[in-house]
Amino acid sequence: MTSQVLTKPVRVTCSDKHSDGTIEVKYFSRELRMEKAIKTGLICFAAAALCIFIPVAHFILVPSGLILAPLLALRQFRVTNAIVGASCRCAACGGELTKLSSQERYPLYETCLACKRENLIQPHQ
Image 1 (spheres, rainbow, N blue to C red):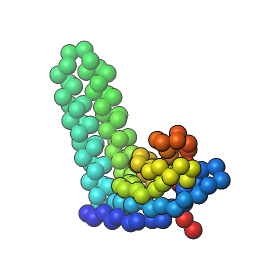
Image 2 (image 1 turned 135 degrees about the vertical axis):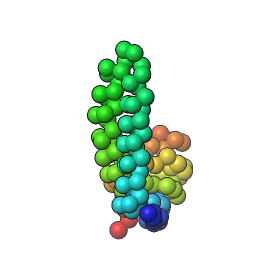
Image 3 (image 1 turned 30 degrees about the vertical axis):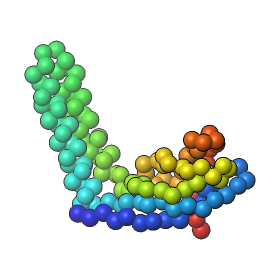
Image 4 (image 1 turned 90 degrees about the vertical axis):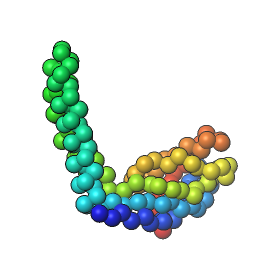
């Protein structure tokens, strides 16, 4: 059960201006993803079991919990990576891009908080 953090170079583009940066991506092993998926499914099943004792709402909450448990577990299992850090600057104003999306799915679009312009982040070739 291991995870691995890699630093990758990226290219930030805003209109016709460019800047370079790096992102840190954490990759999850299959075992760790399976553990998280099982934990998510068990929590959802436990919540559904607790809802049995709620008089009228259990007719909706228990079936919903039983349906959502495998769906949420599968969704959790499919998360293979997460962006854990970034060192990127806005190509237009040079402001720090602090909030990057949670998964590494290119192209990434992030809005600069200083100038309110959208930046396109792609892997650097």
